[in-house]
Amino acid sequence: MKGSTWHGVAVVGSLLTAVLFGILLGDLVWQGLPQMSLGFLWRTPSELTSFGGIGPELLNTLVMVGAASAITIPLGLAAAILRVEYGARPGFLLVFDRMRYTLLSLPTIVVGLMVYEWFIVGLRWPLSVGAGVIALAVVNWPFVVDVSVAALKGVPDSFREASLALGGTKYLTLLRVVLPSALSALVSGLGMAIARLMGESAVLIFTAGINVSRHWGWSAPGETLAVHLWYLRTESVAPHADAQAAATGVVLLLLVGLVLYLTQKLAHWLKPMDA
Amino acid sequence: MDNEAPHINVTQLSVAYGDQWVLKDVSMTVPGGQVLAVIGPSGCGKSTLLRVFNRLVDRVAGVHIKGQVRVGDFEVIGDHVDLVELRQKVGMVFQHPNPFPFSVFDNVAYGPRLQGIKNSTRLRILVENSLKQASLWDEVRGKLRRPASSLSGGQQQRLCIARALAVSPQVLLMDEPTSALDPLSTAKIEELVLTLKGQYTVILVTHNLQQAARVSDFTAFFREGHLVELGPTKEVFTTPRQLATEEFLTGRYE
Ligand SMILES: Nc1ncnc2c1ncn2[C@@H]1O[C@H](COP(=O)(O)OP(=O)(O)O)[C@@H](O)[C@H]1O
Ligand SMILES: [Mg+2]
Image (cartoon, rainbow over all chains, first blue to last red; front, side, top):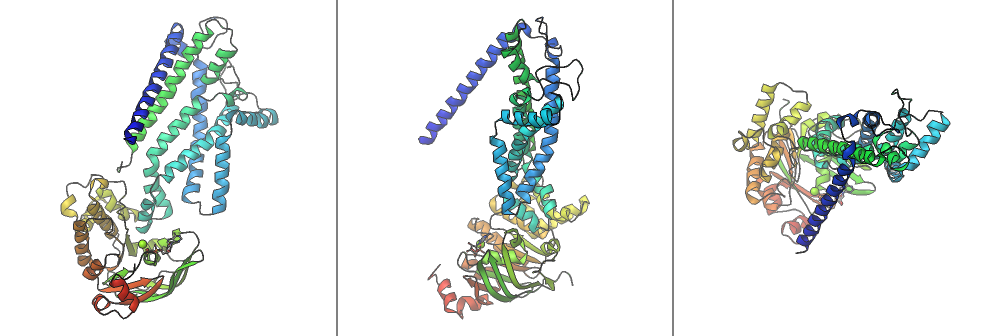
C-alpha cells in the first residue's frame, strides 16, 4: 500500500517536472523564435543591431569546458583511484575526504574570487579564456573526484578478491576488473559533471570576462554561453536582447541535453554484463 | 613432481586483527591430495585460516601473523613471499558465488590471461577442460558468450570453481561454498569435491556437518581461535577425543 502510494507520488512528481520543463522550453523557444536562424549560431554578437549571434560564445563554451575536463578528468580519476584502491592509511583518507567535501561545498563564486586573486591580481593574467579554464577546472575537480570515487566504490569488493585470489596483482586487478566494471557509472557521472560545467557562470565572470575579442586566443577574453545569457539579461542594451537571451538559452539547454543524452547512451552501452 | 598435491604444514600460527587474536597457536598438517573439512562455531577463525593460506588476509589493515605455514616446500608467511606465485598455487572459492561481470568464457579465461596466455586455441582448451573438471561443461557448452550472471546460483559457483582450476592450482580453499545454494546445487558441488580429491589438496570450511561427513577425509574442529581436534573424519564424528568436539557435533552449543 505504502509503496504504491510513494510510487504514485514519484510518478506525479516526475510528470510535473517534465511538464514544467516543457513549458519553460516552449516559452524560451517562443520568445527566441525571432532570433533563431542557423546564422545565429556562428555570427558574432552585436550591441547595435538585432542581427547578432553567439558564434564565439559557442566556441568558448566548447573549448573551455573541453579543456577544463581534459585537465580534471585524468587527474580526478587518478586521485579517486589513489583514494579507493590504494588508500590504506587512515590519515590520508581523512585529509583527502575533508578536502573533497570542503571543495564540493564551496560556492563557485568563491572559487571565482580565489582564481581572480591568484591569477588575475597576483600573476597579472588578463581576463582570459586561459584563466577561465583554470577556474572551471577548480570548480569541476571535486565533482570529478566525487563521481569517480562513487563509481569505484560501486564495484563489489568480491570482484577484487576474486582477481587477487587468482594471482592478479593490484594493478592488473584495477585494469582488468575494477575499471571495466566502473566504466559505465564513470561515464554517466562525468557526463553530468560536464553538463553542469556548461551552465557555470559565476566563476567565469571575473576570470574569462564578459566579452569576446575579435581574435580568439587563450589570453584573450572569452565569454561563454552561460555568461552571455547572464549579460543579455542584465546589462545589454541591444535591441531584442530578451529574444537573444531566450535563443541563447535554447542553444545552451540543447547543448547540455546533448551531452547528457550522449553520455547516458554511452554509459548504457558500457554497462557490465551483470546489469 | 610439480603436479603432486602438496601437504600443508602449519606451525604455531597465530593471527590478530589489531590487538584481537583470532587464531591462537594453531599447528596442524593436511596430507596432500586429501579433503580437510574445517568446522566450528561462527567467528572461531575458519575464514581467517583460509585467508592466511593464500595471504588474502593481507588486505586487512593492521593484521598480524605469527608462525609458519608451508604449502609443499613453499613458505607462505613472510614479508618477501611472491603472492602471485602463492595464489597461483593456492586457489580459492568464496562463500557467495562471485563471477566477474563478464561472459562465461572470459571468467574462466581470466586467470590464464593474467599469466599472459593470449593464444586463443590454448585459452579455449583451458576453458573447456576447466569447465569439464567443474562438471559445468555440459550445461554451458553452447553458452560461453553469455553473461556469467545468466547462470543459476549453483552454476555460478561451479563457474567460480572452474575459474580457480584454470590457473592449475595444487590447493583449493573453499569457504562455505554451498551456504548460499539450494540442496540440489549443494549435492552437485559435493560430488565435484569428491572428484577433485587426489589431484588437489582441498580445505573446505563448512557449517554443514553432514557435508563434512560426506566429503572429507579429515576434519578439524576449531573453537575461539584454537584447534581443538583434528583427525580422520570418521573418528572425529564417531569417537571425538575432546568433550568440546562432542558437544559441538551433538548440537549442544553453537
Ligand atoms: N577484517 C576483519 N577485521 C577485524 N576483525 C575481523 C575481520 N574479519 C574477521 N574478524 C574477526 O575475527 C574473528 C574470526 O572471524 P572469521 O575468521 O571470519 O571466523 P569464521 O569464518 O569462523 O566465522 C571474528 O571474531 C571476527 O569478528
Ligand atoms: Mg567465515
